[in-house]
Image 1: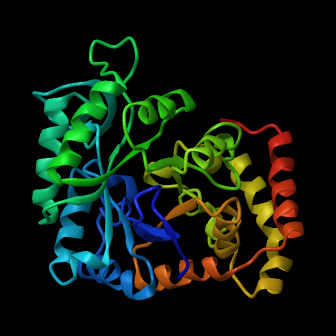
Image 2 (image 1 turned 90 degrees about the vertical axis):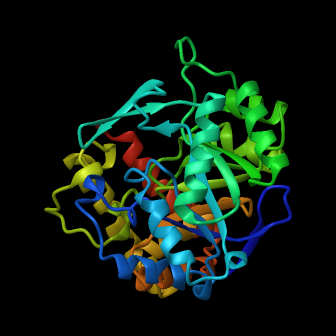
Length: 335
């Protein structure tokens, strides 16, 4: 597995990280997975060359972190680089901006100092570890809200946690260009997590150039669009759970994406790979500072995704794949 540096930290990370939202199970994924299967998946990741593992308290109310903690009982902590997050909480006493409702439980966006300190304590306890390598704000405060917390204040508490040794590096997810610049102003920002796939290229105009200029690792999540770009879904597929409201799972959009993937098949033959391999390889080809998260719930899926790092797409094929995606953009795509 090819590696890269995490921002300016000097920490070596695999170019593909294991995303554990789906491993956490719950209603967003149609139920829970077999515990031993997902524990084995996490434990196998470093042996397959994947040392970066991403989780969050908001993934099924801490269950993803608990499963990771169970897996870590049989692992060397130094073999993995762990990302977890703050800013999404279901604490009904320490409320924030309304975020989402899951299983009739209200989730909030909350980045105040007390909430972050409580979250890191609970995350460390769930995982049974003394520190996390990257602590990332999951969703950002809403300007104008009575719960709004300026990034300067958020960075104050994150920098303090870093000084205490509870976190090694700071990251931010779901940010706009102005927010990234604010984070950089008040401390060291080493990684930005953003949605990015060949179908969703919205961050290319401002965020990707900013990350490159500031030596910030750009970590792409949902590079397979929640499984759509795996190439494994039938034409009559019915989305489930968290897929249902997503743009690319609307009927017309899904069919257009499948038409695009049909045109990739000669490339699969050329590179001796799968549709999913191509989708991941395309993202990685956009820059050596780009990392990607891929949700795997089995050992076989991890090993299959790792193959994507070994594919060297030609400039012509990278351009061709982009052109096919741009053709979809020109169509009427319902959001």
